[in-house]
Length: 102
Image (cartoon, rainbow, N blue to C red; front, top):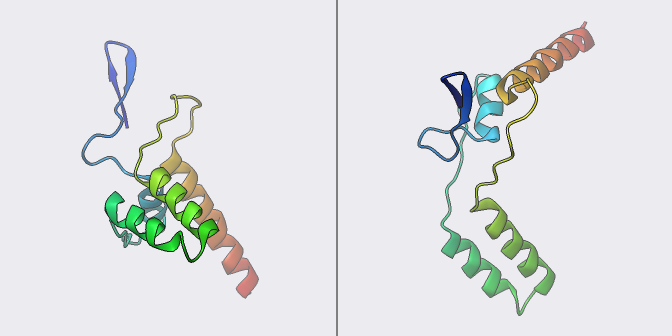
């Protein structure tokens, strides 16, 4: 989310109430997301338990635990909002489905 202060745009990242891209996508189609929150410890424990049985899957799980428990913020750029993009995709998808059913 961004806010304008004295003509400058400030990007607020990681604040309470920030929406992730998954939440924005669900909002675009009018559905409530069912997102499960897991602790990093649970993901790491799963990775450690998998290591002797399936080393490759253990590494994938370890990577996922690192990627999913860190916030990645890109610099502000462009002029389109992600919520607007998801709404446009949902609208075009709905039109395509309506056209296919005729």
